[in-house]
Image 1 (cartoon, one colour):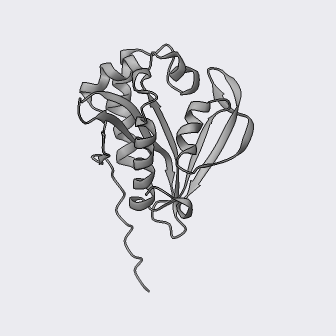
Image 2 (spheres, rainbow, N blue to C red):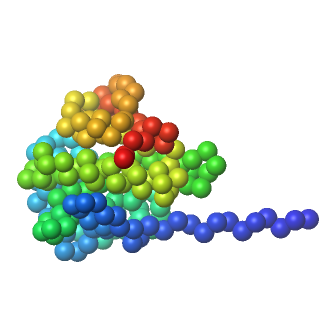
Image 3 (cartoon, rainbow, N blue to C red):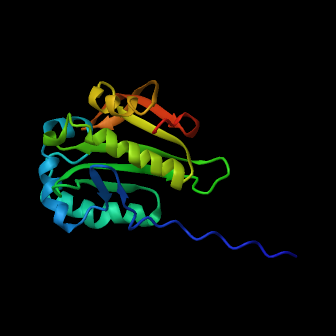
Length: 198
C-alpha cells in the first residue's frame, strides 16, 4: 500500500509586493487608513465599487487589519495598495479576488478589481497597476484566466482593461446586487494566451 504524497503547502501572499516604473504595489498598512477613508468618500467610487456607503474610518481599519491580510494569507484575495514611488502618495487599490485552482494543471483563475482616487485619474496609473498585477497573476500564480466584472455602464473601468487586451464577453442580466438592488453586469476576461504586456 503506497503512502499518498503530502499535500503541497498552502500559498501565502502576506508580504507580496510589486513595482512598476512609477508605482509601488504593496500591502495596505496602518498608515494608509486615512487615505483609504478619504478615497472611499468619492461618489463615483461608491457608485460602482462595493464599498460601504457611508464609508467610515472604522471600515478602513477593518479592511486594512482583517479583510486584506486574511485574503492574502488564505491566497484567495491578494489586494495591493498602489503608491506613487516619487511622492509616497497612496492613489489606488488593485487586486486579484476569488482566486481558485492554484496549482491545477489546467491553470488557476481569478477576478481583477480596482479603484483609484479622483486626483490620480486620467494619468495612466490604474492601467499601469492593473497591467502589473495581471502579469504577476499569469507568471507567478499560473493563472489561465483573469475575469473582469463591473456594473453595466462602468465605462471608466472598462477602458482600463480594454487597453490590456481584455475581451468583453457580454452582459449578465440582474446579476450584481449593489446598493440594495440588482444590476446588469458586464463581464470580460483575459487569457494567458492573449497577454500582450510588452
